[in-house]
Image 1 (cartoon, rainbow, N blue to C red):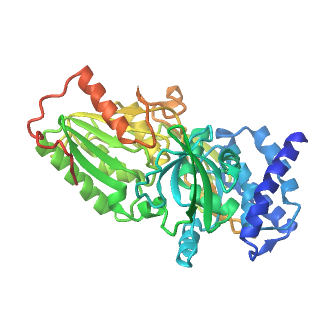
Image 2: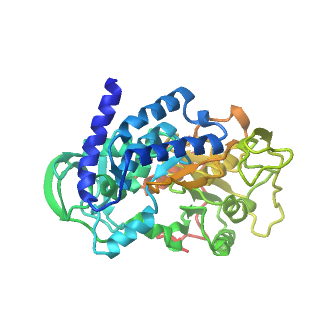
Image 3: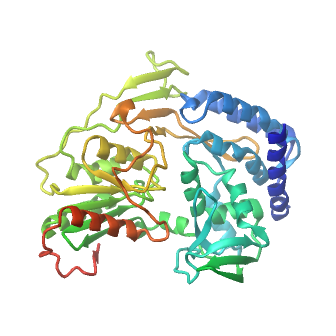
Length: 469
């Protein structure tokens, strides 16, 4: 009971400011909220092959049994999310989550109507330390690196803990990183959008107090999603090295991505590149064929598969005489992809994949393949996501609150099988500061040069300032 009472107090502390921010929202009755909860339980049972993949049955049952006590008063859709989303950290799977309905479009409509948002892009760690990264939208800020101590009189730790209690993702580190990227969204959901923000900051041992108006800029997350140039970059570097950055494996015009990577490998061939760095630290996934056709075909040197086996739930529309509706099936993945040793742009050098806090979903499958088949070494600072990924995401809408529910229908075993690492584990551990992402690249190149000095940079001697594609 003390735990439940504490949870209810935290919920109330969040709902009060939220309620004032959405006074005109449609209010749902307790019975409607209970129906939404039952819908969640039914869809989990119908779609998920094994919730124990990420959360114990006892913990999940206890959380679901305690949830009705949080739904005894009328709530609007935003307040319903604040209550129900406390299941997200327990799910511990970024493919299994309750999210605000249509939050991207809602954010754009809010800004188009003259609204504003928290004025900074931030980074957040699992300890709850909140630092400014840039102005909202990504423009450089003179306050970058400053630690946020209070916002409008509330300690940042209190604000962050309320947000983390509703964030989704595989691990505490993953959830903190994702929350940092969407801090402007969570602040709006839980605390509204005041016209200005009173901030207490700490930078270089000095306390700063300032007032900043809310920003009308579109957040960097949403700008990035629509910009090919922001999502994909290629650079030739000194020392016959190259850096190819892919922040997503989802792009509707796949031909454009394939043309981009073909041009990159053509440039590397002409430059005599011997070391390729592929940066997927912020790659949240997408379609597997993007990396299969756009990257791996250029340097894979043996047959490979993206998983060794799977467990799936047979859902409506996918049943057959041999796979009845509702069955849970475990099977080996027998499909192998053959290498292309005679490809005219084949890359024969060393490959390193930079992985990190934002590497997820299809990007994890890509990393698994690279590591388990020896196509590349993984480089980064630690383990944030499961190597055994769920997938086949099914999106549902709760009947009354209209919140979004994502549930996976299968779980993949990494190519190396059970003996492989449970979490994405880099082969080369190097510190990775989210405020200074280039430092990891520099540290890796310095390490490689020290261990086996790269050949003199002849073809690229004039690339002291890296060329961009």
